[in-house]
Length: 346
Image (tube, rainbow, N blue to C red):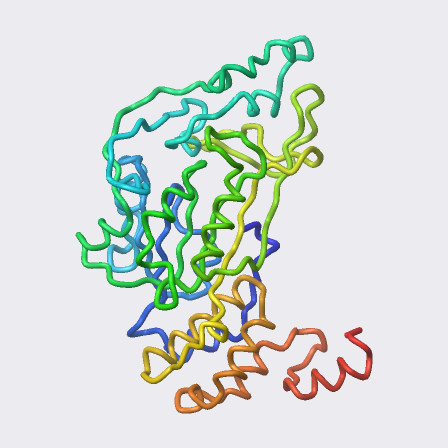
């Protein structure tokens, strides 16, 4: 997610970390497309988070593994898919972060940078016209199968950045997508038909995850201008070598971004009976807060108040979720009173 979609001072999560609530049951994050390492916001969980990463680039996995504690993070040089099979990995020489299993279509030729006279060179009847890549044949597998091989029984959050193959990865992770599976999913999305798939990636991912009981909670979107009149870049976009390259623009058509989906434990009728179940509720609430959804976190704490009471003071935790708008700590009840009196104007 874009940095402005993250709550960088999650006081509720900080309290859980200080109390070592997840010390013996760390928040487990599966990161598919881990190039560059885990995202910065996961540092908010301190040493109570662990990562199982995947990236088809062996050299990048080696770099990640050498720069992190193997007990907290490990990256496997594996390409995940909807089924074990042989496929071609497209290696883009201009930016290895764009390496993937899906081929770009002629649509991609319209975006980025091009001289106006080149616009007439589009070949709509040749889907691969825009592609510049070396194809390397590789063996893929599924997350379900690989998890069995390494003894991974469960995890809490799944991030998927697979350059158009997000739905393939999700279909290969079916046994982890349900009421007892991942609490949340962050997936890269595409709104335009820039990959050789029957539909834009966002539609495919949304429909599949909705069918598995996941709800869309937030999106972070980027624009790309047409090559006929390129707009200024909106962020410091760089290639795999750290060199500046073209990327999202300040104006243009919405093209891609990230979407965050979560399970709704209330509608799942989740019934916490064990200490691990209670921690699952607190993990879900913490993930909500980190992704700047403190209202959803508060709802969980209130709904599961009785179950949580044996582990923590729910009122104290709720106070940590109250927006920091007053220059002092206020309880949830005080906040609600002010909210009603001012008709929502804090």
